[in-house]
Amino acid sequence: MPQAEYIGISQVNGPFILVENVGSDAFYGELVDVRVPGGNIRKGRIVSLSEKATLIQVFAGTDNLIPDETRVRFLGKTLEVQLSPTIMGRTFNGLGEPMDGCGPVFGGKRVDSNGMPLNPMARQYPKDFIHTGISAIDTLTTLIRGQKLPIFSGNGLPHNQLAVQIATQARLMGAENFAVVFAGIGIKHDDAAFLIRELSEKGRTNNVVTFLNLADDPVIERIATPRMALTAAEYMAYELGLHVLVIITDMTSYCEAIRELGVAAGEVPSRKGYPAYLYSDLASLYERAGVVRGLNGSVTQLPILTMPNDDITHPIPDLTGFITEGQIVLSRDLDGKGIYPPIDVLTSLSRLMKDGIGKGFTREDHPGVASQLFASYSKVQDVRSLAGVVGEDELSKADKQSLTFGDMFENKFLKQAKDEDREIGYSLDMAWDILSTLPRGGLTRVSLDEIKAHIKE
Image (cartoon, rainbow, N blue to C red; front, side, top):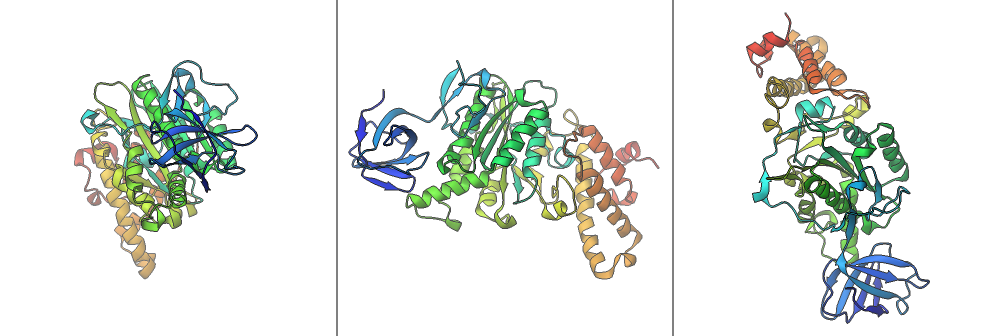
């Protein structure tokens, strides 16, 4: 039951208000209605409380609040989202409110958005291959059902385009019950329009649930957006039996919001001004992905973050890398060459890849081909460095073949059209065609039988 209404607040500090002498029934995370002069109601939530005072974050900000006239009502519940099977194909704002003009969500139930990480003892080891249609991902940094695999990008790189392409092409091999939850955090209006248009034009909107927090929305809503998206994904997975891929962009905006609110609340900052609990906060989101033993559905996460100044040691990518199972890194150098998607395969990895490829999952030659591509492309970088010193004319025949392989690998294998959906078999066959330009003695990661089967003399 809602508590009594309190008239007057004692202090306003940035997005926070302080209410004194609140009853003992108030609790952390409780939702609050803040009625400003004129009758408008803004949502807020309790972030700190004691016997004497209660600190409240106001979602829409504290502009135009008059302390003596502001009314605060404690609602006795946490931030919730209305969920039912009809959310499929719908678009919501960062607080889970419909923004597609189709009216409210009817039926179903209201669910607390502050979900919990999965119990490790309830997890089932992820193994099934998820098709994205991107050769560099499917072949070399394979996404596995139940995995959390972030994309590390930078300002100006085409991560939003890549996110939309994956959202419209992704599917679980051999399963029809696949869906996508797409969450945009702090994105610009033109990016939001692009996302909605692309998802609509490519015919996947009926399988996609979208949550959009725009750049001019209140900062506090950015903290709620990924939780809303993950709560919807868990409902779709564990109650509707769907295999759900959650794509979140941009986690950097989320972390910046945490830092901004931490400073406003007077918290002691840690590295680069971020609060000391950033690691545990990110873990509380990332660890909501997984496959639960005994349940049909699953949640797979593909969070995207932009690295400030392209610094992979920055706290956000650094902590994300500790929590997640690998990373896909976008390269500014490859982007400058006109290669899309500009995935730097040598700094990317998928720690669960080995258990979801090969016989029974993709193709029997997949592990060997992936290992050989990594080894051969790694050598290309050494040869390019040598050529920069002595010149290409002074290179050996084998080194020149290595350079040819590198150019073909980047311009044929990595590079693909923004609407091109490649099957894994096609990607592997293309890899063999490119590997055939190398001396047979250099193909040490694949068996002789595989060479004979896939490379014509």
